[in-house]
Structures are given as C-alpha cells and as structure tokens.
Length: 151
Image (cartoon, rainbow, N blue to C red):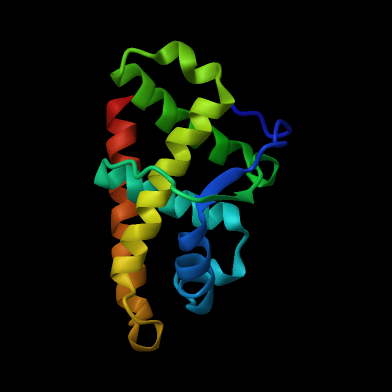
C-alpha cells in the first residue's frame, strides 16, 4: 500500500492530457477552485470520475505529474481502496503491495477522468463553470457513495 513518504516515483499522466486538459482547461477555469489547488486534488477528482465511469484508459505517452508524497494520507487511503477493490474483483488482491500496480490502476482511472473533463469543457471560452462544477460534484459524490456501500 502507498505510504505518504514513499513518493519517489510520481504518478504519471498522458502527456496530451497534461498539456491539453490540465494546463489549458482545468487550470484556466475556476471550477471547484482546482486552478488554485495542488495537482493531487485534480488527480483525486479525475480518479473519482474514472471510477464512476468504471473505465480504465491506458496511458500512451506518459509524463511524471504528481508524487505520492504530495498527497494527504486520506487521499492515499482512497487510492489504495480503489486499487484494492479492483484487485479483489480480479482475484489479484496480493498485488496491493505493488506500488507499480496501484499506480497503474489509479493512473488509468485518472486518464479516463481527464477525458471526461475534456468532453465536459469543449471550449474554455464558452464554459459555464457553475454547470461544470455541479456535474463534477455530482459524479464525485456518486463514487464516494458507491465505494462506501461496497465496503
């Protein structure tokens, strides 16, 4: 399982998503204050969106983005919970001790979440931040409800 100080290898993100979605959309809009927060908060919102959709999107061209050492312990616990749930479903719960496996699961869900945000914000100049914030919060709440009901 991830530990707060085990953060040597960063979580990766698809290079296109980093530039096109995070830098040019999320950080340019004041949606849920994400442009003022650390990358770990963007990561967690995107993770929740990907989990809610139930789809992991493999990364193509990766770039290190945020280190686990930047995350509060409760965020790391949520990442572990997501990975454990996935691994149990696949009968591979013994891989929860593999940082690489936990990272891969989280990164692929985040990649999906970024693609969801990309669809929600086709053009930053025309974006309605209140509607986007409501949609994001609704989806994130659905994930927390889903996971808490499964435990």
